[in-house]
Length: 223
Image (cartoon, rainbow, N blue to C red; front, side):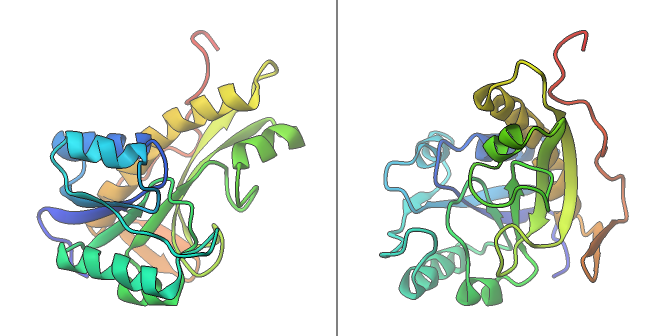
């Protein structure tokens, strides 16, 4: 799809929506040439829906069906229909805790992105920050990637490093990973909607300025 002057984003989330807020603010500030036109959630009273409505953005709960980790086929069709009716060009997952399958992936092929709180391919799946902390790694971070049929397995768009400090807990580490996510995700989305990304096999090449790989986001002052 050729980039438009102002792309239309649909955001899916299951939780508080801090990444959605970072994206919406980046759009409002002109850092992403896009606007969020719809927010959907699989959790009826999710914070992301409240935050979207506070900003005047249409926000809906769509029941996910009986499965715990994925949408059932009827729910997938309902999500796709809502996004298409809103004219969504790119689907942005922001803490959406469901795996997307064939119906969704076909409808928005190559136009679905996700952010994960680890340096993939390390620590895919749930509670990645805790996985990293328990394993004892010295650095972790976050990854923005295209979505495919696997779990956190799509081609990597960008990554940002967060050091694991000696006195970290899983909670303090997650807080600093969130800070990195709020920086990385808008930069990657801006490149995507500007048409600056080229996919070659599993490699995502940047035509424009690419996000800093070794940024020290998460260091304490003076660290």
